[in-house]
Length: 311
Image 1 (cartoon, one colour):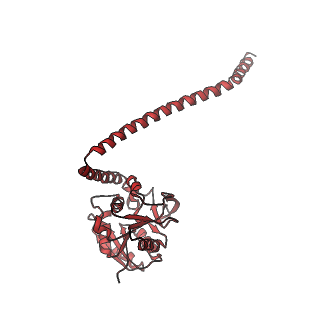
Image 2 (cartoon, one colour):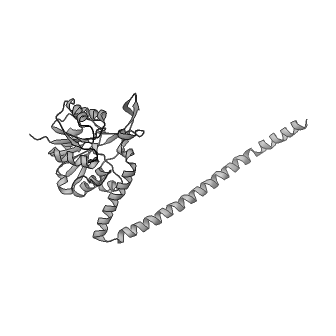
Image 3 (tube, one colour):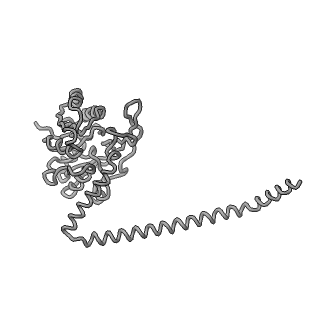
């Protein structure tokens, strides 16, 4: 019988994180899943050894160094899964033990949703005695109650570890965009939201997005290691969508909005300058009042000093 959920683990030369990810998957209360480890340019023998010791039914796909990337790895893993549902579990992230059972129950009960996301915590890690350990936590989009296209147009509000989705959606919207080096998840969510809903499970955090702000090299998060790529690809996604709009509707509305944005920005700059000038004046006036209030005391001190000097 084919497993219902395909778990695609993207990994690249991070053996300790891969071991942790497989252990994390092994702790899930829902076990009708298939794990596909996509080794993106790492040592095949090392990855096979880690997988063999995981105690799970795992398939491994090896991508030669220089032939992969985040999107290539995701696409190959999802295509190979052959399951009704899929989720990306990057090697450094983690789940609550009931992530799969709760998200699967949501999609089974809500056929109109193409995907479902969960509340997520950022887990900050730092290196101690050669190992990455938890140093603190913070909510990712605290208080969020939904995944909406309106909010997603502004900024990504979900991360791969937090989203289970129907494999069939790729037949409608296409695959992860392999021309992108980053933001491939945001680009996919935008396309999903044009064709179906993304549900949201309110309540406790079920996904944990690890971040290591001080890490460099292979241990670094894409959020920090690919900062420039994020900015470039964010603009690429937006420019592509704008070009599609102009191709259908013409450039009239975008031109108007661009001019409005320029005028609004200039107005904000002017008001900020006015506010800063007023605050500086108020501070100077307050200081003068403070000095005036203490002037008699300073005068007496100066007269006393002159008397002492004369004597």
